[in-house]
Length: 142
Image (tube, rainbow, N blue to C red):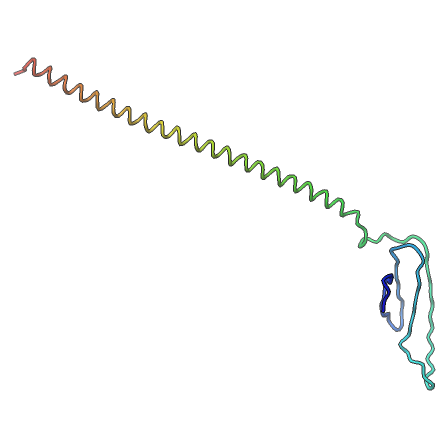
């Protein structure tokens, strides 16, 4: 069973190379075991070459978290732009509602003005007809 401090537990090939890179500095323990049983009748030889290199290696991009701050900043910028767009949309909705109310008010006034003009026109026609009738009755044109 692996202890909580284990970094790697794997089975390597029976012949070949195996490489492990530690991401943490400090003391490390290496434990190796074999599947070959020890019995009276088998003579198995295991040849092991251990090469430990200590020093700096290429950066591990998988565990590198510096790009996260860039992404989080871009995400914050996008969220701010999204909020700006939402505020602009709300402002445009309010302006549209005010314009619609103004248009309806203007349209209503135009309708009432037209009705008033029609009323004045009818009243003028009635007055002129009465006046002309009286005029012709007074003159009695035969």
